[in-house]
Length: 456
Image 1 (cartoon, helix red, strand yellow):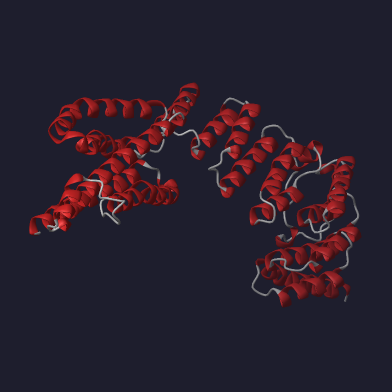
Image 2 (image 1 turned 180 degrees about the vertical axis):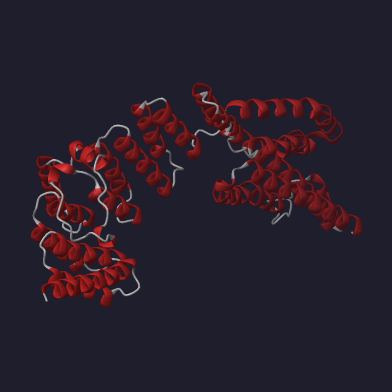
C-alpha cells in the first residue's frame, strides 16, 4: 500500500509540474494585452482536456457494477481475487493522470506555438522559425529515446521535450522590446545643411517604428521649412493624425503646427482655419477643441487682411511721452489715409464676427485717433474696451493713458485729460502709466502757472 501511495504522489507532482509548465509557457508566448482572453481559454481547455478525461479514467477503472468492470486488467484481476485492489487502482489512476496531463501540456504548447507564429511578421517570424528548427533538431534524439524506453505512454513527455524549449526561448524573440528611434544623425545632418541626407536618416528610423510621432513631425518640419514642400508636409501631418496611437494632445500639436505653416508659408488663413476645425471635429467638447476655436476666432478673415496685419507698423504708446499734447502729424506721414480706412474697415468686419476681439478694437481706436482724425470715435472704442470684463489691469491702465493722451493732444481738452489721468492714478497707482501720469500732471500745473504769470 505504501509503494502505491508513493507512486501516486510522485506522478501527481510530475503532472502538476507538467500542467504548470503549459500554463506558464503559454503566458510567455502570448502578448500581455491578450492574457485575459488566454486565461479564459486555458480554463475551458483544462476542464475539457484534463479534468473530464481524468474523471472518465477514474470511473472506468473503479468498477461501479458487475456489468461495468474496471478497464485495466490488473484492477479487475485484483477485484476478482478478493485481495487489496485499491493499490492497483491507485497505480492505474496515477499513470492515467500522468499520461493525460503530459498529453494536455504537449497539445497546449503546440497550439500556442502555432498561434504565436501566425502573429509574427518579417524578421521576427524568420528568427522564430529558425529557433523552432534548432530546437527540433537538438531535442529529436531525447524525445525518441523517451518513446523507445517508455512506450506510447511517454509520447506526451516526448512532445513536451520538443516543444518546451521552443516556447521558452520563443518568448524572448516574439516579445523583444523595440528600441526607440534615434534621430541624432538626422539632427546632425540638418545642422550642417545636408537636408536630403537628413530626410533619409529620418525615414530609416521610421521604418523601425512606423507610428513614432516625433519622427513624423521632424519629417514634416523638414518638408515645410527646408524643402518648401507644404503639400508633402500636410500629407505627413494627416498621416500622423490617422495613426491609432497618436494621442489627442499630439494631434492638436500637429494640426496647430500645420496651421502655422499655412499662415507663415502660404499666407492662407482659410487653410489654417480648416486645420484648426479638424481639431474641433475630432476632439469635440475638449479643452483642446476650445483652444482651437479661440485661435480660429483670432485668424484674419482673408489673405489680404493677413498681409495687412503682417505689414502693420507698431504704434508707440503716447502716454509715456512728454509731448502728448503736441499737434498731430499729417496722416500721410505714417500711413496713407485710404490704407488706414481699409485697415479700419477690416477691423470693423472682424468685430462683427467677434465683438470681444480686443486686438481688433484697439487697432481700430488707434486708426481713428492717429490716422483718420476721429479722436472722438477712438475714445468711444477705448471706453468699450474698458467696459469689457476680466481684462488685465496693465491693459486697462494703457487704455486710460491712451484716452488721456488723445484728449490732450487731439481734442485739446486739458480738463477732461486731467480727470482721466487722475482716474488712472487712483485706480492703478502702482502702474508705469500712473507714474507717467503724475509727471504729466506736474507739467500741466507748471504750464498753467507760467501762463497765469505771463497774463498778469
